[in-house]
Every structure is written in C-alpha cells, then in structure tokens.
Length: 162
Length: 268
Image 1: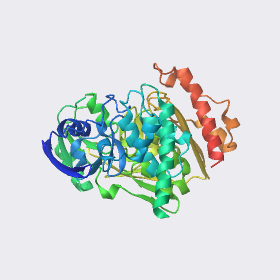
Image 2: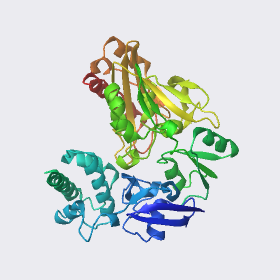
Image 3: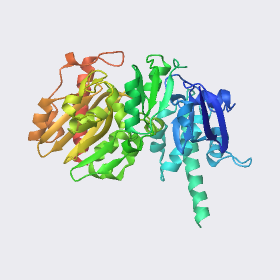
C-alpha cells in the first residue's frame, strides 16, 4: 500500500491505494469518478483516456502510484460553472455518440488533439483517433464533432486575443 | 484486469535504479509501461517489484550533435516525433516515432523501453538497426548489429540499463510499415538508411526479431530506387506465420514496404 497524493480536476486528493491499483480503478472506485470508462483489458479501446499533466493517457495502463504529484483531469473536470466544454458542446450538437460508452475517452482524446494540433483536418482527426474505439462504429459524427469543436476553440482563442 | 501484487519503487537517479535493481531477484524496470503493464494485467508477467525509472531526468533528453542525434532512453515517443532536432536531422525517425501505437501510448512509451523489450513487431528496432545506431547502457556501448539477439531478447545483461541511443545522421532515410488492422503493430515494417558508406535495410514485424536484408542493401547501394529492389524477396521460411498472415504474405509485404520506404526516403 502507498498513500497517493495528486490533484484531480483541481481538487487535491490523498488516499491509500495498493501499488497494483490502476489509475482507472483509483478514479472510478476510490474517488467515485465513474465517467472514465473501462472498455477493454488490452489497452486498445481508449474509453479510459484522461489527462495527466496535460497529456492524454490511458488510465488503464498506468498505476495510481505513478500519478503521485500529478494533475489529473477526467471528463468530470471539463465543464466549468455548469457550462459544457466546447468539445462536449460540439459532441452534443453533432450527435457525436450513439450508445455513449466510448464518449468520455473520445472527448478527452479530442481535447488533447485540438490542443496539440493547430490545424486539424478530418483525415488527421481520424488518424489521431487510432487509440479510441467506438463499437457502434459511429465515427462519422465523432469526426464531425471534433472538426466543429476545433473551429469553436480556434474562434474562442481568436476572440480572446482580439 | 488486476495484476498480481508487487511493490512499487521510484528511482530518482540512474544510480538509485541500479541499486534497487541489484537488490531484487526479479524486479522489473517500469518506464512508459505501455507493454509491461498490459502484460501484467493479462498476468503474463509477475515481477515482485517495479522500479519506476520514468522520472529520471538524466535519461530524458534529445540532443543534436554534429553527425548524430542522441536521444535519452527515457524520451517518450511523442517527444521524439515532435523534436525539432530529430525532425531536422532524421525526419524518418520522427515519423516512425509518431506512428507507434496511438497518441495516448506515445505520451507514455519510451525509446529505451521499446529497445529493451525488443518486441518482434516494435518500430524502433528497425530504425536503430538501419541507422547503425549505438546503444549506450549503464555499463558499455553496444552496436545495433549486436544488440538485438532474438525474439524479446537483447544483449543486455542482468541489471544493465539502456541510458541513451546515438543515431548517426544519414543522407536519406525512410520508413514504411503495414500495420495489423487490429493491434496496429507492424505486420512488416522496413527502415532504409543511405549514408556515404552504403545503404542499410532493416525489417521488423515480419520475423521473430528485427533483421537486415543484405541483398537489398547491395542493390540499393548501386541504385537507390524502388525499382532496384522490386525483384528481391526475403526467404519466407525465416518469417512469422500466424492467424494474421502467412510467412509468404509477410515476405511479399517486406518487398512492398521496402520499396515504399525507399520512395519515401527519396522525397525526404
């Protein structure tokens, strides 16, 4: 057992965890943040993607103790003051989901890719979604949602600098 | 999936990692963990202790030298893919790093981890072997030709840690792979590198361990064009055969990927 201290969605948390506890179980079962999903056992599906120190990672392929001192953001940490994050808003408006199981991971991956890549085209979006699987195969609207979100984020950034 | 229990230790320096490693009979080093943790979840690996070396600063660097790019073993795939030094000197290496796994995997996985594991379908071994890189460890320097010794096996001794890799800058280089549609690991990946001394061709994914193709190297040294190797195949009897493809299919892919790698290198 180790005591793991980290910041999750801006809140400092400190809890005991077994060394073998994967970050995703720590988030879901110990902190009750069940928005982060577990869709596979093979690190392939991406339903568990969260941000650790600003980078998208698979929380099922990292131990909670490795996140000691890190800043973790989960899907629950995106909306601010009751207002959806622009990527969440774009998924809602473009119907970027069918059953919704993969959606938290898709959105966390989308937020990361929009931050990293200034000019996203649809082909790049598809390539960047390599680690996120939608078993409903609803990729078309997911790509549209990310495309739309990237434009929203860009225009928001423009508004801020203007 | 929950791994077997183990004790987690964090090493702040290389010296500390070596001490911890020397103290335990079956400890494993944890770098990015993108292969190891997946194997532990499947209970295919059962180390009693994990020594986390991901925070060791002295292994996390990328440095441009006069005729080489030196990359710390702790450099993550996304750092190599987006490094100005790598993109300028060996764009094919940056491209290769940017094609490993997926974005989330690239944010964690490291160069040293990939080499020490020597997965038959890993991308980095092809670049290391074709570019005639030198692998520096806590004890010595190992030439790429002597480093990869077989499936999941390397020349590394017990308790020896990869610290950095020096990649000589080639005149031209290119990488092409045919990823398995499900796992995205290379079914066949070919890295070609042309230097003033000639051409080296390294193949990953197709056989049990990365290997060179001397016949292609000779042909490309004479004429660095895809056509020069169009008629050269590798012997399928040395290649992998599984549910994803027969050895003959992989042999075919090797020639196709080699031609594409040369074409890509020509346009670099």
